[in-house]
Image 1 (cartoon, rainbow, N blue to C red):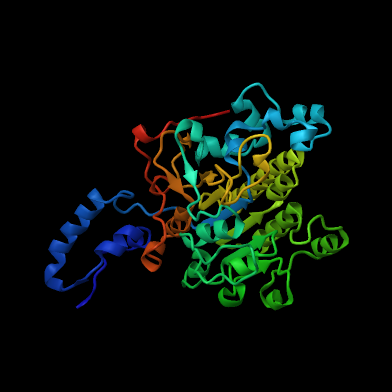
Image 2: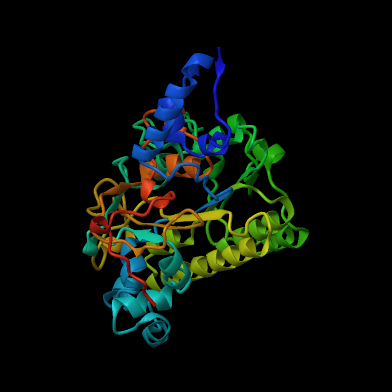
Length: 409
């Protein structure tokens, strides 16, 4: 009695986690014919891709802009916040020239040109509540550590109830994938916030991280170029617990060129900080910069053989924010609407459906399993409480009744 995998389906099994979980069995030589028939039926009626169609994705970049609202993603800049009183804006004319346009479609393209050209044309965007696409965080806390934990581990955890620097007791999909033979030592973490070493539990996971922030993480800290280390040390910090997004971007770009990671976390933080400070102008500028950083990273990956045509980018935020003249600055359990979020995905296995409308609800808890599935692994089998993968972005076009393709300019 041996494990039976027929010629021609071995690679497919590696990339069909749902099938692998439910169908693989011990077979004798005498049951080959029956098992082959069952295999065909499973492919025909299974929920994912066609028989033998292996996924093309070999690399995944998870990119988060902390606290960036779905309202700006889909509607662009909000004119009512172009004021000193409500948005901390002194030069409203300059801000208007940069980001104000007469329609939501034009405004969002001015603010986030890469998202609304490349991703809207060749990927998918979820979260425009006005069009019946809802993305939510499910942890109930609606702030950062619980949000990152949900995204990375596939579910909320009532024990994760603050932003304190406490090692995450949960297994993240990054740590889990780093244990696999195919991805071992090909996983890395980059984040601007000094709590990330605890969110990823670096002392347990041993994932390489930048920056390390504290001495106990020095052994796993990624060394950026010398010029960047010097620049960071010579530039006055704006926040005691956060470094500048631009420093992070240059560290990431250098690392991708040198080390060619296959799974990468990139956590930008300025959007959240400027919003809390009540500076709508700087919040918009930070979002615009993140969009351009993503553009440059996408162009870099498409210029390198390892990544070209084999890489999926997933963009999101760790939580939403409130709505209105003052609540936009805040989030948390008591802030209405702060559970609303957004997700943008582009890659070789994601159908080009653009801005989605009238979709089933999507949750941030589904991202961990989605990342694993894109890389041919079944995270739900290892962590059953995790949300299921977003199958509509993994090789199978959604039904037309559940989507409204929008090739926006």
